[in-house]
Amino acid sequence: MDNRDRSIEDDFLDAVVKAETEVTILLTVDVRVCGVITGYDEVCLILKRDGYSQMIYMSAIAVIQLSQSTGILRSNG
Picture 1 (cartoon, rainbow, N blue to C red):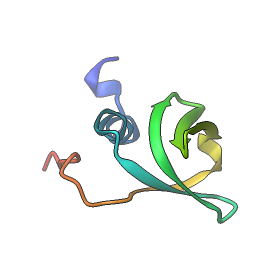
Picture 2 (picture 1 turned 30 degrees about the horizontal axis):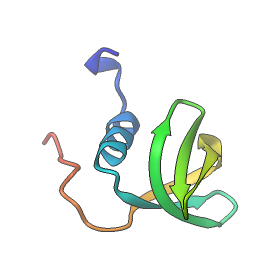
Picture 3 (picture 1 turned 90 degrees about the vertical axis):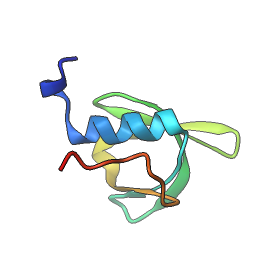
């Protein structure tokens, strides 16, 4: 994928997957799930928690928040 075709969402998710950072995901139905994102595409992501993996559709996600402050994300200015 050409860099100019990449989105902020892709950059964020790539960094989170690579760092294996725990996240809290708030779904559109006001449910929170926590775990580590192990992969994603334009339709869904895979969240690993308690030894199990679950698929979450992107359309069901309202917010993805890092569970702890990390330096994995840097602003380009």
